[in-house]
Length: 142
Image 1 (cartoon, rainbow, N blue to C red):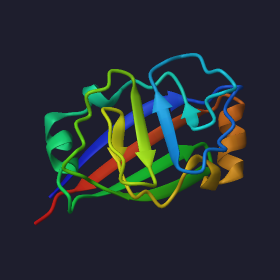
Image 2 (image 1 turned 90 degrees about the horizontal axis):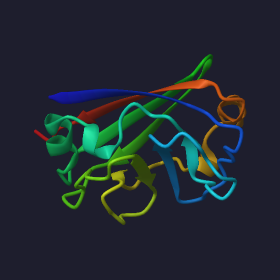
Image 3 (image 1 turned 30 degrees about the vertical axis):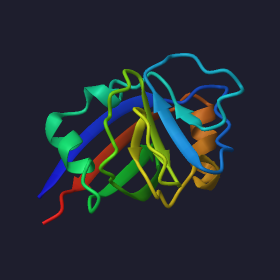
Image 4 (image 1 turned 180 degrees about the vertical axis):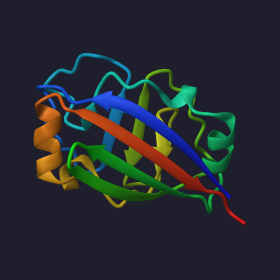
């Protein structure tokens, strides 16, 4: 069984996409040049806004999260894992991590992409303020 969530957000002129261990989207609408992991702002959902079904599924150690970022003609799919430590209680942020570290903002761990590894064409579109659709599909363990 799988659970799907869709998040709408947009880029910002200060998107850098240089972080080597995470990437993040946020409900916040502004971004300073220091936020090099943040790839999109103005999200219509933060961690705590995700459905109870999604939250339960991603908190399984064997869960697999498929995140597709679509920005105009540019698209990339990221594979990540769930973790029993994931709580999804942060009001504004969602962070994908390359490591196993979890906090209230963490949506998944062991991600195969970070901000620095996302396609540069996608990052350029986001720097120009383009709309981003984030499709989350978590596969529940059988």
